[in-house]
Image 1 (cartoon, rainbow, N blue to C red):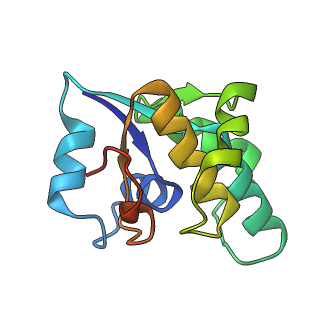
Image 2: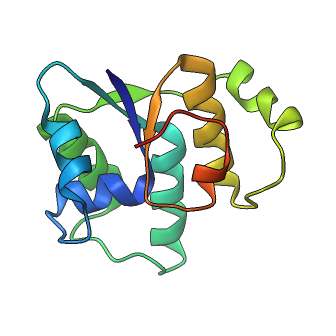
Length: 127
């Protein structure tokens, strides 16, 4: 299976947060699964860090790539085709980061790992 982690799932996983469900943790750790981390999530983390809504032990430019590589998450850049899908995505969720993650999952055929109830309202494969 090819998985795309939502930003909060990435942060919960790399910090071993108890909020991460065992189902999500097992899916990420399953050796046959490919797990992707989006540049959209990197942007969200950087922005929240810069406006002090997110505390990290290191600057995001060090913290995120280090943990992404350590946990063997693959980089997923945001490309034009995924971005333009926003024009046709129903406005069920107003968070631009989550909307972009939905578009990336749809355009790349990925299963999105999230706990966000609003994301689950979309017709996107999810765990």
